[in-house]
Length: 302
Image 1 (cartoon, rainbow, N blue to C red):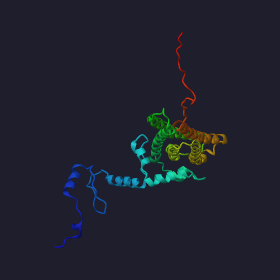
Image 2: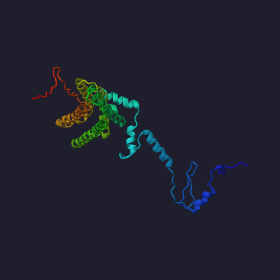
Image 3: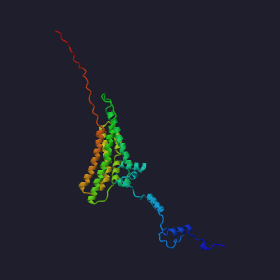
């Protein structure tokens, strides 16, 4: 005999029926398209396990980049700022060497995605470049002097590291803090973040790496010319970046802020040149005149 349509419908298992009778608060999920029916006396609400849906939503947030970032005290927060590729870093280095009027380094180059990878390695390379080039310059300047004995000056690496990293972190911190305070006082729009400020300062120092290598050449006029060129290029990157933020402030504050940024940058470059690449001062060796003869002692006898 053929089965009736009612016999083909999905039926509840006997175990589920017994469970509901024993625990009226239990819930069931029907597999049919129609609504499930619970035995009489069952008042519990039907609950669905949404763990899979939450996992899918979390994954979609990660794919869209909308997942909330970790706190600034965690390692994961800073890990994202080192997630850049080589071509992106090289492009930022190239743009820091060719500052163009109207091209804001943060707005047009960083594009709200600052990194710490480039500034960190630029500072490390500059530290060793200054120390090694300074040692070579001292050696070449004193070459040929009979009283000179070459000794590697490893303490210059430590001094260069302290100076460069303090400048690359403390000066941006001061600039960012001052600009944030002024924007709150004047009720202006939000400016740059601290990491964006550190990033633009780090990339602006790249020009000093080839400059420090060329400082080995023992020509004082060339060294000062290279300092001037490096200050103009790196200073232009900073001025073109921070001027749009301070120009809406009072005229005195705007010019004083930009002047302070330029002066601090100039002090760094001039200080590095004066300390690591000192002008050689040769001490003349006294020589006896050709017609000079040593006095002779004579004994007189009476």
